[in-house]
Image (cartoon, rainbow, N blue to C red; front, side, top):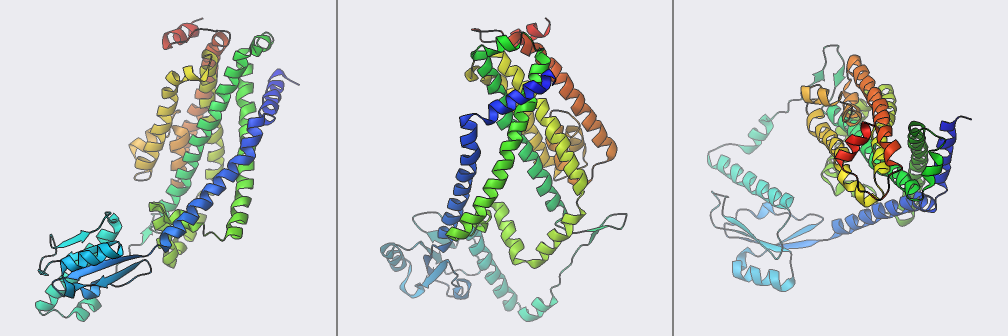
Length: 434
């Protein structure tokens, strides 16, 4: 058995037998599922809260605008006046009061909401939309326009999307591709941060315990560094798979037992509102199901594997070098910025450049640069990236990984035996010249 294999095996066994690793492996899914169920339950409670709003309409023309819903009940006290309406609203503890001045021709600056708390932006926009529609209808009627004829004259236009090869798409095409690509890129970033830190802590731990002095006498720094990266990677993959399996089973079982609607989590976010709209409109669901089989799934899976492994190895070698250069985790903070910045830049470019223009100059360049390509290219792959760009990006990523491991091992071989001194960037440059 080779030395590298022995190091990988030792590192893997040491990780998976660690008490904290075992506890968090099985406790984390339980905590995560508990949080999801709690949020779902609280969202359901929030959606069941009912509110009563007093309406005082001095104009007397907006009664039909305020109709009751499952959450909101409107109490019309227009005949009692504003001051009496305020007393009722405060005395009964109602949510608020809407007052409309006697000037129906001009909605702006004539409507006021009174309440202890400011209502949500969506609610105010909804009320404004209703009032404006009512005023517009009244203006059209006053000018002799028949609203039924006007409504019948309205038409809808649907733009069909088709490429030059004749393949058809829908308006949900980019959203589906962005969801797949964005999820893969974000997952990679989290994996790098979590398990890269694990590599760094492993190096610091052995350096602090002076075990490394014995190991380094018979192992080359490059082999030891590579073994730690590969061993920790396997431990991380093992933990991740357990999280997915255990978490999925717990989520389904506990959701059924407690009768919690898990869609409530989605409904509490902007993305959730889109999901709710999709649930209410079968056409959108059909478009999503139509787009999923058209994704380059094989290319996406292979690309995810390559960039996932390549990106993780690239950053893990940097984490290992940092761990070898310091004596404790506190001293690592000064070296974290060069790692976090490219990852954050990749996420930023991915969500703001790739989704808007996946084949633009910004998206293309950052999908080739090794430090950002694992994230940005993963987001671009669903949009069918040219083969030459994929080949160039992967080649540069592999070359950068090999260079970074070699580069990091030069710091590793000196820093791993340095104690009692907080290193600076100047010290790192000096070690590279040895």
